[in-house]
Structures are given as structure tokens and as C-alpha cells.
Image (cartoon, rainbow, N blue to C red; front, side, top):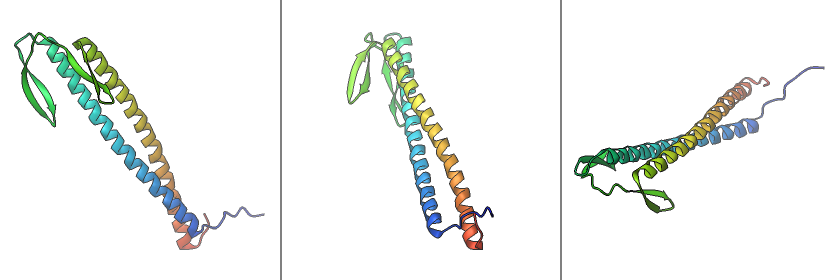
Length: 149
């Protein structure tokens, strides 16, 4: 009794190549998702730092307020230290600086956890891509050489 491996078919190769292409597209989407999450984290960190600068400043002090796109505007600290923060779905609430900072910290933590989850998933997909690449290469070589896999 021989332990012969099954013959590789072109259909199997095509199916595995399609799976490989799908995995690469999934990795690309996960990478884009990571970038978007990182942008959101950076934006929340800038907002938190601005709230902190507002708290530290005395009325009349000039501080820089980030506008986005690496642009800033000078503003004077007033007696009204409230901050308006977006809580989602286009809804914003006024909070005192301490509450605003805590809220922003919680959003940063939430986004950081999401980034970690996406990164772990991307690593899993990268592993699958490597396995599929090795499998496809072996199948291709077997078809070219007429050997079994």
C-alpha cells in the first residue's frame, strides 16, 4: 500500500489563488482600518491636550487651538472653561474640563482597544496569506513538474 498524495488540479490551484487574493484584499482593508483608527486616536489626543491647556491657562492667556490638518489658531482663555465634546451620532454635550478630559481619555482607550483588535486580526490574515502562498507555490510547481503535492 502506497501513501500517494492526491494529484493537484488546475481547479484546486485556481481556488487557492482566489482565496489568496481574497485574503490579501482583507489585509488591505484591515490596514486601512488601522490607519483610520490611528487618525481618530491622534485627533482625540490633540483634543485632550487642548482641554488640558485650557485648564492650565489663566483668563486672558493665549493658547493654540488645533483646527485640524496641522493648523492652529490662537485663542484667549476665558472664565468659561466648558468644552463641547461629540458623544456620537452628531450629538455634542457641554462638559466641564475635567469631565471632557475623562470622556476623551475613555474614547482614546476605546479606540486603542479597537486598534489592537484590528492589528491582531491583520496578523492572523498575514499568517493565512503566508500559508496560502506556500501552498499555491507548491501546487504550481507540482503542476509544472507533473509531481504530486
